[in-house]
Length: 449
Ligand code: S3P
Image 1 (cartoon, rainbow, N blue to C red):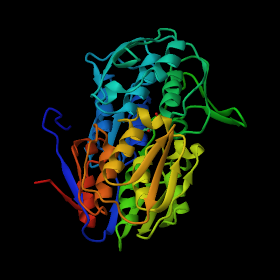
Image 2: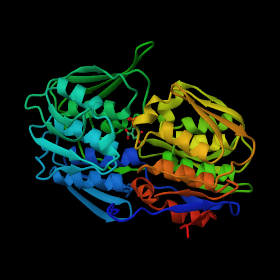
Image 3: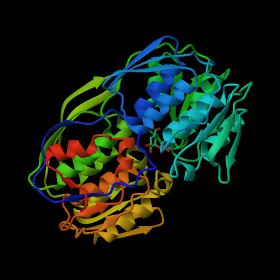
């Protein structure tokens, strides 16, 4: 785990040579968290292959141990979880420290809310700024009590319900984390727990719960949304999980290969769950040369290899409805837009304000410093692509946000002057090998002198 008492690690990216080679990106972060959590709730032994060994997921592994499961690393990405069964979580002796991870914190709040235990949650400065009331509100309706700082923020304690009640909850925000927290609380609750989401968000929880033997039904009602119901107190049975490569991590080398002239890169084994592929739709509309090869299923999720060639991009109008399918990809899409010809409008980005940092403000600020014409109007981000590469030559503050760090390093690979980020340490939360992997493709990263 990174030592955050150590000084920040600035890193610079400069334009150098074309990117070339074949790579694989680390396992999907969302699926990795869920595999550890559901394995810990199942009866028997769950074997996980391809687990993301980033800091966020390692925090979840520690948390599941603290809640009583046996979690063991067998080798590179290979893990074994021996579960306690639904209802079997033990009260942790120490506070659970979820570091930078909103997914870890919110999903675990749901898990413990329907167990008769009290659990304390802490996290880093970024996580301690993020809103937790969005999960606390439905969990309190189910009978849990949550004592949090002002604004429902960490540190907080969840006093789990002794007799949890099923609810029917309409989420006011499109959030897979909110949906998942309620469904996970529903697992140890008698009766049927229902979440209605206004727009579809990533559905890894629904898929994986079924994979472990739970009954999850999904109905779509036009004009209302997607209604997901879990039947309470199932026996979850251990099941092997193969984690596909994370499309949200693949996005960085993908856009780098599109932008750096003369590049050709293949990224193997990228998850293509339709609730995650919004970026590919946008890039296709912008004229990107991306070929999906070897399409197949792995571990219940569609995957393919992506062959990417550099070329010029044009601006596009990205509808708000697409946001949930690419919510983590806006920093890197904005970088692509900054190098395109013409205006790109990215609509409906309110949720970006409550990610690991305020990404809406951070993207606008960072691109502006790099000489890009950019503005925020309401919840929309507008980037004016001049059809050539931005000036660069700036230092970007990453505010403990891994995706902001990686996006601006990619911009540095094409900008006229190098781009420096103030701290590369947060990258380890989701993509620990980002630097060596990009350097292997030919990226010019270096520690500023
Ligand atoms: C995630 C859901 C998304 C995403 C996050 C991972 C998940 O957050 O930004 O990186 O694994 O459920 P929201 O559901 O809050 O949008």
